[in-house]
Image 1 (cartoon, rainbow, N blue to C red):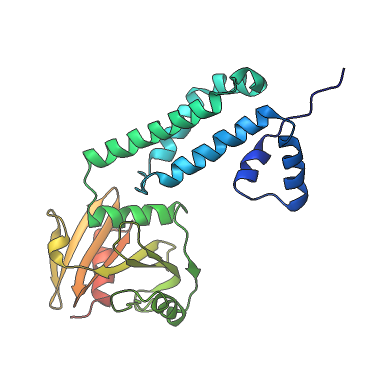
Image 2: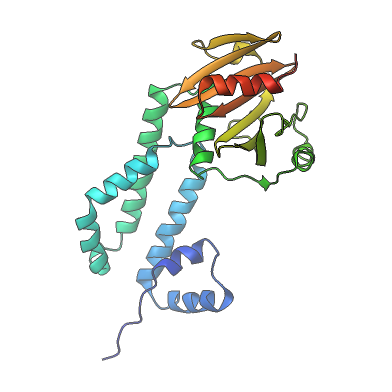
Amino acid sequence: MIAAPPHYGDELQDYVDKRLNANVRRAVEDHLNVCAECRRQIDALTWTKQAIRMTPTTRAPRHLREEILRELRTEKVEVELLSKNPRSWGSNLPIVIAIAVLIGLGAVIVNEYRSRPVTVPTTVARDFQELRANDLNLSLETTNPNVLSAYFEGFEVPFPVRIFDPQEMGATLVGGRVLDPDGQVRMLALYRGASGQLIACETFNGREAGLPAGATIREIGGVSFHVYREGGISSVFWREGPVMCSLASDMDSEQVVQLAASQAKS
């Protein structure tokens, strides 16, 4: 009796994502020509990727990763049993799993955003949290403010480029990126203080009227600073002409205010 050819695992996902080298890709394609089960897996993976691509790009709450990991740990026994006998899953299970995952993620995200409006301070705080957790990558890493300024100008952002002076803040520039998740372009520059703390600066078109209530207002040197504290993150906002500037950090609020005051232009 001729043994059945081995089925592929992670290679199928890499095949759909076009991450395989030429030799492995040819081997997978040869296998797909003779294996109906792996072809069903490819169809399920392709469908899932297309469904995710068509899903609106709403930023997921930061705690979603922890919730998923907690659920996976809870179901550890079931997952291990399934992994030992993958042929028992049935030909339609990959599609069922994909639908369940998409529905579950959608429900969590919708519930989060219905229960908590996304304001500018919330967005800035989340950006900082993701930077701190390495969940938000910088497009350019540089310690040179002139290099970062030229990089931002290359995007033709619809407002003046504003790079804070790291020496005046007693910090070192780390890099930056341009953010545009909801149609509002924001320039983000990341700094690291002398004690290692991260400081995120964002600039964007806007006015104080776009900020929510609940801020502590500080007047320093003729400039009004709106101070928020959310989830252990302090964020300070002020206006310079048509541009809103912000600093966010997990430092003490007063420290962030003083850093902002050292950079603000009246």
